[in-house]
Length: 330
Image (cartoon, rainbow, N blue to C red; front, side):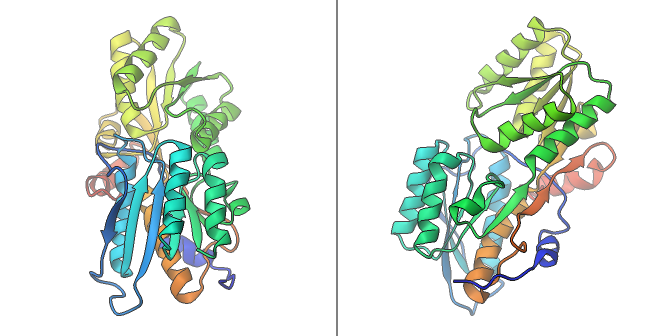
């Protein structure tokens, strides 16, 4: 059992100044794979095995950054990283149980589908396996035994987005959710509605971009009063731009999360802004925090979540961020 220490200052510094971001790319590996290694960092120390289990959605570039951060942290700390993912909650819970059965030293898990995955995370904690949550589950992680949390305050992020819409003179917005029931995505749109009430939620099938494009386009044709579209992942923002063109609409597009193409679209004035939750930092800190806990008994966050966002990326700062996005760090 680790000793609880108040280390919020360390968390802020370790999270690289903490600013922003959240979701997706082509690829991200599917199913269980090994990673990490003894290159650099704490090569001479004890080697731990850490499992990272996510709800990665195929084709979402967001997860490339999560994994890049996790793998960099594993290399730096001589950790064997075992990454696996399943989009459905019950399947993700099974992967957590598999990690428990394989007797890993620590587990990092996303809690997008809390009812299914939360009990599995608690089972790990009850077995004495240090467990941290990241990316989703900020308000629920402690009840399932997770020691720490790394991610954004999605309600706050949504409220910030709604305020920006109001400042831009929006009349009506749609908030596009690509995974119905995902706690973080639902919280974002709920936050937008708090500060910009004339927001309608539009559910789409996130694994089928052709369907996403046609669904958004049909909504724009059906309701020409829509002036703004908020998407919850960079690939969906780029698809929404196509929908706007298809419908002959003048609606503006804003998004959560960032990738290279979305960064360039912001630079070109095609996307208003992105709200960044820094997925690279989430992956890096999830692994690093477990290594610190296993090797030193450290806890990060002083008993509360460590926030990696939200932060705005727009025309005012995009020139500095594009390079980082190209390097898979933002």
